[in-house]
Image (cartoon, rainbow over all chains, first blue to last red; front, side, top):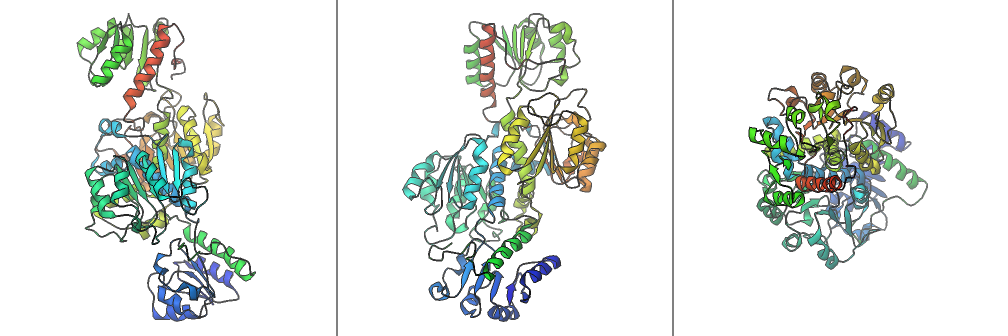
Length: 315
Length: 315
């Protein structure tokens, strides 16, 4: 049996049934985890979506779990050594590179070209042409440091190419990174106009951007985070944005989501909160089914699956 | 004597004086046109900036006018046949290609990635992740029609390259255009996801986008104008944006600027009004002086100047 709990419409459910046939599909609740879903999950051979971590630990029949995300931080504490002997786990690494890279560029260009301020002016019908023009910058030739050079970082590098940006990427694991040591990263931070973090949540990445690294950045630089909220000390970030020490931020992820109403990041100037939408697109679910279908074909033919998670590394 | 009326600070005035020496520089009012400025203008050999059209007609000593804009529509009715025998006129064609192309891309990406809606949500601390995600699009592989393929269109084409956009450019005069006839343009409009107009104001371009061409565009397409407001029938544009017939707009120019408070474009959804800031950047005036300095060197050495205006064509 195949378990899935994504928010499919009728057409997508039919597509899932056709893919799975002759095996049955169980459609779980996309928001909650009722007992009936847990019971179905424990009987499933294949699961596509997400689940409470404790379900995974007890799912005796499960042979393959296709997560519908890239990050899997919430499952990190499970005893994977024991589980991994029988359970293949795959994620959506690379799947979101295009939409996320486009949101990062949209956010940076919005700050450089004043789109955030212009959108604010519209409901007030306030014409500020002459005030705004001298505040604007161009991205051409900017120095960009990518902290994380996975699929997203590599795609962003390509989109920045025609701007003539000087791009330097730090990554301990990924292909094509220019720097692999944190000391090397710290050496280039002072020259960066833009720093973009896109690392997963692991013990090694938690708190990577705290006071020490924000202090290394030049005054007025822009900070982007599309990795995980845990990478950043948000109280320092908010303080530096409020004081103008940092020139702006584009944040897709925060430590708490939804971001609480009283959180200072809501009040920070030149700060675009993209509310974990960077991965989104109208055809996201259809594309996920297409990705799953290819892995299902491989699973049934006994081939190795795409995007098997390296659990020791944490992503 | 050299006349200029740009809004220079002290350092920039000193730079202008050094460039002009041994000739004197007269610094006019950057906002108004007092009688003293007119008298100075009529005695000047070189002018750098702008002036009321009637000044140009009487400026007997003037040999070279360097406009600080690309468009020169407000001078079109002058008797240039008589004036052109003694007066060289140059503009800033190409000078603004980078900032304008970046604002166009910033505006399009903002609409595709929901930045306009996210900026609106921030003062209300409203978390709309799940509502927004399925509304978003990616620019990858979009069909883009450029109406005008001057320096801006050519630069935009380069910035769009890594997105894999299918770009088609219409232009009667410019290099590298794919289409030169209006019938050819009309044939590609129905397939465009994005139409970007960047033509000057001339008798031939006025009203180019009225009901006929907007009706040719597909439902949900995005319209961009960084040329002149006169290209567009704004009542049809506003109607189609309000009804959702068009998916959105990025407008740097409008028929009346500042846009009057009661104008319907202020109320249109998915419409980013960039308030004629697209050419702006913090170093705009310094870059203008650098451009002028090179033309001044050429003028003094008797060489042909950069960006001489073709007055018959109108730009």
